[in-house]
Length: 348
Image 1 (cartoon, one colour):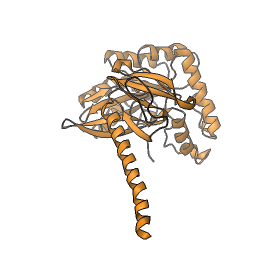
Image 2 (cartoon, one colour):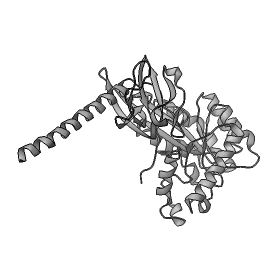
Image 3 (tube, helix red, strand yellow):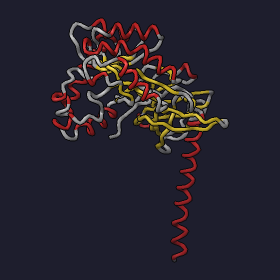
Image 4 (cartoon, one colour):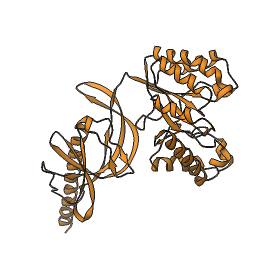
């Protein structure tokens, strides 16, 4: 009797291994055939067009009214139904060349299709995570110049300097009266306009989750109305590691970091602080040296924190040319943040 029991136990185990092998094969096929810059998710259910990369996404309705998306490339078709996304970094080796790959991970329900898009299996085989995004060489270094709290009387000067050096930056804005043209100028001149806060009042935004989203939604809608940009890139006032929020709600940051991600936002902190917020019009030489010290650590991705706050930060404008030159001298490519950029996030 014991021997028969063992045989009955072995059969399902073998079947399980066969299923796992099939899943691994599907995963390997999808990953090795994915080279588009991103699989963008719209409200967790639809893909943006990626036709420039040779992909076509077609919404299809399957058995029992279940909707899924056919990803087509080189006459090979696989389906996916999106459930969630998150950012991560991995390293891949291809043709004996190692590349650091910044990825957007998307969880899929895998289904099988033939070349005529006929469904061959009605139910998902399994749910797995597939990672796809633009590959970066392991020696490639990227820098993000980020400005908080604007716009201000300094914004146009900052934009002019950025234009002179032919680089784009990211502005985490708050609400200011009579600055409508400056919000538009940021976007119109090709920079990323991101969200910081409407009020920047810690007591209002960090007391409750509802209070935070009331503030975030106001600045989001205001920016979108002025610029047409539906921004999903945010920076928490004080950063995600701020401790001032504990005065109003001990666990609010833990709650918010989780919920903003679930709502489709990406939050960014920084790993180089120019320290221009440490005083009024700090010596520009100090700001430059602080940035240079951070660059010497040779991190592959750096997010440099600066501020765009009017009369109290005019020395940031003075320091910016030398900061840009220092960044380039260290071999960094300067880019604006996008929804797919690898975020610097504090873990403490």
